[in-house]
Image 1 (tube, rainbow, N blue to C red):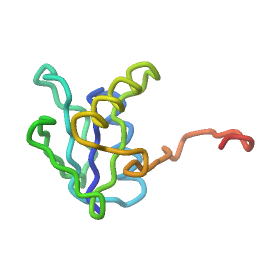
Image 2 (spheres, rainbow, N blue to C red):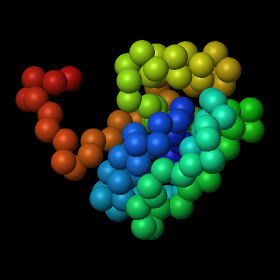
Image 3 (cartoon, helix red, strand yellow):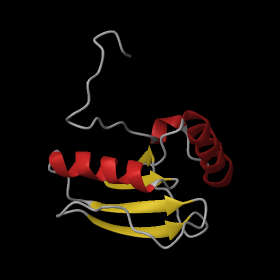
Image 4 (cartoon, rainbow, N blue to C red):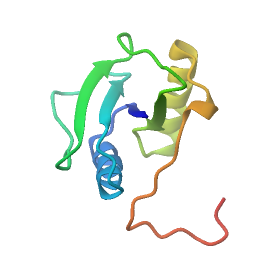
Length: 110
C-alpha cells in the first residue's frame, strides 16, 4: 500500500515517517502539499523513500493508497481535511492511523 501524507508540517511528517520506519514500513511515501511550503525537507529516517507533490498533481487510488493528515493542530487538521475532501474527494474511509512507538495512549481512548 502506498502512503500519502496530506498537508504539510515538517515536525509532524517527521514523526509519522519515524513511526513508519520503526514498524518496518519502507514503501514509497508521497507528501501531498495543499500549500507551497518553504523549500525545507522534514527529517526522513533511513530506508524511507519519499517524493513531494502539489495537490493539483496528486490523484488518490483508494484501493492502493492510505492517507494520513500531515499536520498536528486540530483546527489546521480540519482545514486540511476539508480541503482534500472538497478538492480531491478524500473521504474519512481513505485515512489510516499510526501510533509512534513512544506514544502513551489511555486505556479508555477510542
